[in-house]
Length: 59
Image (cartoon, one colour):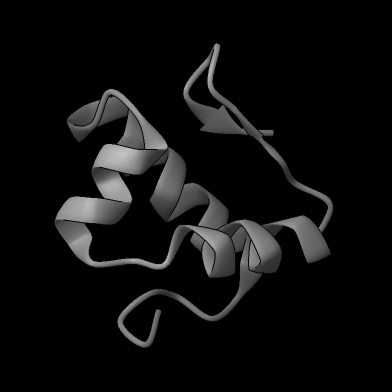
C-alpha cells in the first residue's frame, strides 16, 4: 500500500482506472500489484466507497 496514493479520492480514481483498463477483478489486480485487498477495501471503505464485483469498480 506504500506505493499507492494516500488521498482516498485519488486512490479511488487510480484503482478504478486500473480495474477498468487492466484487470478483470479486484483479486487479480491485488495479486499482480502485491496489494493487500483487505487494507485497500478498508481504506476506501473509510471514505465511503465499496467494491462491486458486478461492475468491477469501487463506487
